[in-house]
Length: 328
Image 1 (cartoon, helix red, strand yellow):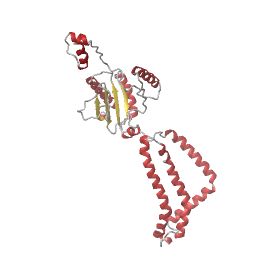
Image 2 (spheres, helix red, strand yellow):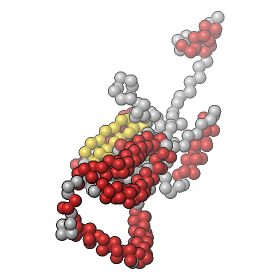
Image 3 (cartoon, helix red, strand yellow):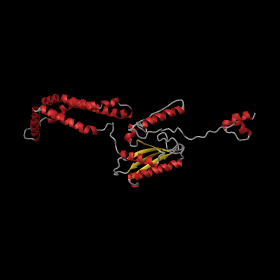
């Protein structure tokens, strides 16, 4: 029994080693990832790697010893009339037939593998995580600059009504939450995690009920067309909502961000608009827009400090030094 265990371990050492290396090779690309993907996959790759190495070592040392201990005295129970013996006999005959026809078998295997690659290759995903349809999405909308909070809230209600209508009715929507405008510090909302640029901006999250049969990707495309027609002055962008897309987007609200910086705001805005015009011509991009408000309405006030002193207007705090100088 000990000799049989030793011979079996030696004969299977190379196949077990190759199987272990094939499994480990799958996880090698994880060490070349960056960001959140590296933080997710490297620990898993290390865990699988150590488990496979430990399995190979144990199968070469501990398992043969335990097999000798447990099978001692039971060697005569396996004979040709048992089901294990019949299975071994059938498997041996099958292998002898396959080895005798090795070249036809290789050709059939290559043809079957090529057909499988051709049939399934185009249907395989290219992302690290496959897309999941959880029935939820997040929508950020931006009204024209300077829009009051009350008007922005009305736009949010119109968007929610359009979503319910396109989904097939309000009964298809499970939960909706939103945030409109910028709130003061007394509100229990941390604007670092959910940021709005001004009173004209809002954010909506929608969860559809299970079993509605609505595909989120197609639903987003339909909403883009419908809302662009009903609210032409409102800019829309869909943001990651489920946990997988949030993690894999590295916390960014959009997959692609372009930053333009410079000492002159007008020049930087001009370059940003040129880049925006080029990007909007690319057919594979959606929701291309300037995220920062650059044309917020302002009021320029010019004060003649000496004239305001002569007419006895109370000065504002920035005018106090000049007001004192004009008063002698």
